[in-house]
Structure formats: structure tokens, C-alpha cells
Amino acid sequence: MSKRLFGTDGMRGQVNIYPMTPEVALRLGLAAGKVLKQNGGHRSKVVIGKDTRLSGYIFETALTSGFCASGFDVLLVGPMPTPAISFLTKNMRADVGVVISASHNPYTDNGIKFFDASGFKLADELEDRISELTVASGQAWEYPGSEAVGRAFKIADAPGRYIVSLKNSFPQHLTLEGLKIVLDCANGATYKVAPLVFEELGAEVVKLSASPNGTNINHKCGSLYPQVMAAEVRAQGADLGLALDGDGDRLIVVDERGTIIDGDQIMAMCAADLMSRGELPGRLLVSTVMSNMALEIFMNDAGGRLLRTPVGDRYVAEAMRREGAVLGGEQSGHIIFINFATTGDGILAGLQLLRIMQEKGRPLSELSHLITPFPQVLLNVHVERKVPFETVPEVGRAVKGAEARLKGRGRVLLRYSGTESVARVMVEGEDGGLVDTLGNELAQVLKDRLR
Image (cartoon, rainbow, N blue to C red):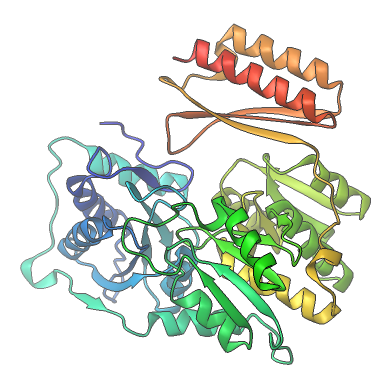
């Protein structure tokens, strides 16, 4: 067994194939209970939520068993977005939160990720301690006495708590009356709460992919397929479209013309708004190495600064806390408004865009063209081994050659997925044809050398 179970966003994999098996989930609950149990005078509590995957029942039951055996009381909230679990963990004074989800992956995958008592994702060192205990062979568990085992409770009002918190992030003097919104819930964890939030604020909501059946999560819908929403926006004459992913922590938008707006463009709009209000401390925006160069140029031209982090909204959140930033995110649509939430929240990001639209009284198409993204290609390459790229001479030569051909007007980035046997190739620059050529050439080198 690998000792490192967690990637950039928790543990993830194909259901009933290691590590996503009930046995590992049970041991994970036991190990997390041991590592995270509070020794004060109160009962330790864990909030467990999930998305709409059929396999959620497997891991919910296994984790509940492990945590109860370790002395935790378990608060079960059912299908809820990832940011809802972050919020509820803090709101319900729990010691830890657990999300059972594989985010934007197909239903055949699932995953498990943790939040601490403050609603932030666990630090690497805590994940490593939990991993080591989970995979340790012959682990002799120090079970608490029979009288100290935990109980499990279903929390019926969890959706209402989360909905209220989201509505409180929207100014009291504004409504969404008169707006028509196309909302794609990806047949995922937001299918109940997201429509209610926008409807209760006054919008007319056209729901897409809001009927999960356990196997249709993310299937040709949601943030990975925004063209579906774009077509419906045009057909309905809607004011905008919001597409969430399976666990609700990312957002992709289309304007009233059906033009797709990604996370970089969302961040540019929100950063410009906050800077105009004097509410972006240090005029600092935090994003990852994947964000387009155009976003960095935009921030520099506005007298601000873009701080880049490794890929993963957990690393964005860590940098935001360290630097005192209030806005950060990823090109993929994870947007963090740390004054309102501790992790990416697609519904919250949508509300902030709608606030800007309502306050300025302008359509999204007139607000969203702050940056013109450089042509960028992103390619995934299946690999058999993950070795440092710099240890493969052919890869190093290919990268240097690509950078030389970009002549300082572009970037090359190679990285491994934290959850899959995949190497990711990113190339961007001013010449779209050259970018495509270089991306394909680099992908071929990785295929040849990392098989």
C-alpha cells in the first residue's frame, strides 16, 4: 500500500479499487478519529456529507463506523456541496468535516477529503499522519471503552443553515428580481440548495441537470460542459448562466450572449470591483500557476499583484491566510471569497457576480471583457510512472526548446495530477498555432518517455 493516500484535493480513485474501497474508508475513519480526536472536556464531532454518487452510501457507512468506533459522534447531512461541509463544520462546532466526492469526475470514481474545525482543508502533515495509520500493516487500534463509542445523527436542517449563510453574503438592499438565470447543477450535490438560493433572492431559475440518479453526476453537464448551458441561455433569452460541478465548489459562467467565462475572467471582475471599493488588501489576488498570463498582466496594469501557488484551492487558501488576501481562486472555477467562506464555493461566486451586475446595472457581457486570455492549450497524458521531469533529459530538452520558440512571450508548465496517473501539459503564448504545436510535441515526449 502507498503511504501517501491524499493528492491535491483529498483521496480519490475508482470505486472498489484501492484506495477507494470500504476497508480503506473504515480504516481512514479510525485513523482520522485517532489523529484528530480532541482530548478536552467535550465529545468530538465530525460532519459527514456527500455528493449524489451511488457509491456514496458505501463510504458514508464505512467512515461513520470508523469514526464512531474511535469515539466521535457523527453528524450526517446527506448530499451537500463541499463548501457546505466546510461551513457546517465550523457552524456546528465540529472538530472535523468530511466530504465524500470525486468532484468533477464520473460517477465510477469517488473520493474523501477533510476539513479542520475552522473549515479549512487539513494541512499536509495531518493528512500524512492519517495516511500512515490507515495503511500501517498490523495496526493495533487503541479503541475507546464500550461506553465511549460515538453515535450517528442525521441533521435535517443542514441545507437551511447553508442557504441562509449564502443569502447573508448578498447585500440586503439588492434582489435578483427581473433576472432569468440558467442554472446547471451537474446532477450533483447542489441540485437542491442552489436553485433555492437564487429563487429566494427573486430570480427566475431555469434548472438544468438537477435530477440526480446516482450515475448521471457530471455526465455531459455542469462546469465541464458549459456549452450545454450556453445554448439554453440563448434559447431562453436568459441574463446569464451558472454551471457548477458535481460537488459545487467550482463555477463556470456564460453571459447573456452565451459567451463562456472561466475562473480567470471571474477573478478579474471581482478583483476590479474590490479594488474600486478599496476592499482588496494590498491589491493582491492569489491564483495558481495555471492562471493565464493575461490575468497577471491585468493585475499589474491595475497597480495590483498576482501571487501564484501550486495547483489546488487548498494552496490558494493557505497563501491567502498567510498574506492577508481576501480573493483567490483557480482558472477552473474554484473562487475563494475568504470573508464569506474558507474554500471554493460556486454558488457564492455566482452571487458575487450577480451583486456586481445589479450594483452597476449592466449586463454581464459589458463587465466581463477585462482580460483577453492568451491562447492556451491544456493536455492530459497518461503515465505509468511519476518521476521528476528534470530527471528525464529528453523532457528537459523539449521544455527548453519550447520556451525558446515562445521567445519570452509565453509559458510552459508540466505537472503531475495529484489524484490520477496523469501528467498535465500547459502551454500558452500569443501565437495560438504555435501553442498548439508545442503542446502536442511536449505531450508526445511525455508519452514516449514516461510509459
